[in-house]
Length: 80
Image 1 (spheres, rainbow, N blue to C red):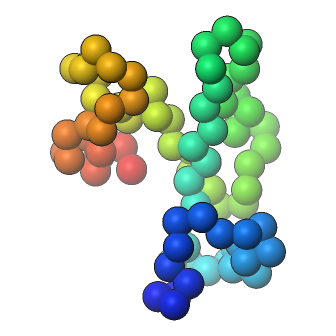
Image 2 (cartoon, rainbow, N blue to C red):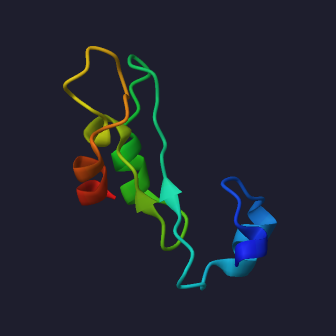
């Protein structure tokens, strides 16, 4: 898979590889506050097969006053 190791891929590329045990798919859906949408609930209803939900609000560094800052390595590793 090294020759195809990209962060963003096409839906066609992904569809061909959904059964690849080495592939990790993260659903990182997030919506602006006030849009009355819940990405976790939407993920639970429907998502790409074998995808994991990446809850950026939960995984972010909550010690920062700024939103969605990279967390300490230990927190990131325990969540992902």
